[in-house]
Length: 605
Image (cartoon, rainbow, N blue to C red; front, top):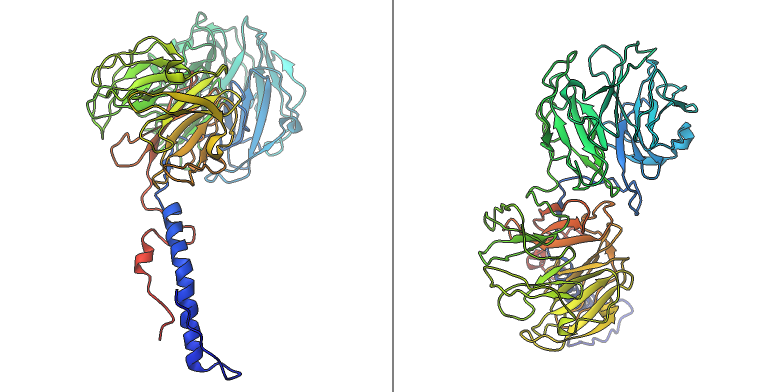
């Protein structure tokens, strides 16, 4: 830069001098500011993803640690016209209450203590219903020993207050298994009948009156419903899902893997004479996971006149499925539109046909569609191993090999017909980790043309094994922890690298056991990485309360040039899909990408 010195011989600068000073200051400012703006454009303006979530999570209500067996229920407990949320936690025998302080069409939940309402249930499963016809909601709670307790609401519809519970009221008998009550007017006679799940599905007809109920001797397998006494762990809920004026049945098992999908039995009878057809398994896509859980609770959460659904599962996930159809023709956005029945997947072209296949739980889901329109075939066994795993061509022979922790599974087939050997432990120098949980990710972190290995551990962060060999003959040295400024994000860390900001170097995502996903932006270069402190879930990819080793996988599954995300948990739940719908990025100050080219100088004469 050339600096011109002009001597001022007047107490007040002349107009010409002021003009020269102004131009000089402008030149100096541009010399500094424009490179800074350009640098900012490179570092910030790259297209960051925006994901279209096909489901809505639990609104951050349940905390950061999964609470097993969450069973949500939507009811207007305070009579203000919007739906509040109760979450029954059967394995902990307690209840959490979230009051809706928003509106019928714009929910806003705040947690309050259920004990403030007089509710201190110690049972496993509960439901709210007006037991005595006085216009307010009472609480019914079933427990492990087969008894059903009534907490009568002695308050009002707008100010509830619950009394000490009464066991097996109105002629109910205990049952020889877990009691899980559901109360609906199944026969349209104006009073509430009782269904008790747990062992099988038992029906207690109300032969009394709305204000003075009395339950008859139970009937097994009523109205042709699935779920007889031999079916273990059945829970049921009812809703008029098709808007035809009668109640349809939704059933699910809360024990083991049996019956994990939601069975729907449509009411083919009438409002006063119900009759149920053969069950269809999850026709509306409301199964929140492959693990056992609760049947859905229904309510119009967004005030649009149709029934939305909430469901929970054993892992503690509570999920809202908003009905984007209508009251008579419901449609719920799928959590897993590709039908991948694995808990977590890695996407790669395993058969060399130009489209992405899915690999999860040791099984191959071959893409028999195309790169832009995938269709996955039924799974076939490919590898005697479970999650987590990583795929990479570690020996540069043109096909993808597999790693799970310190186990190496060599692809002894070809790029178009893969076949994997049995586990080889400690291959290429990958050894020295004794953690019970290990998760691999491979990336060329130093830009030398070969892949280096990062292995997530149970409690010690990410271990780096630098490849000091070559692309065709790898030799890993390590482990080294906390390399390149990588911060520890929790336990059971699972790393995956992706240049998400498209600045030419790999950024880091770390998923962990509490269902959280952290992003660490690489502020260095492709040959000299430097990671910023981890940021929790900046792109809305949190796997809500899934727990148990969350895993994220990136792939351009729809061939539109950006990366979509598959989020799952290793061994628990179903993988969930997030489509990347980002278009043009925008600066925080409103300057869009490319605006610098249209800037013009200012202040010139």
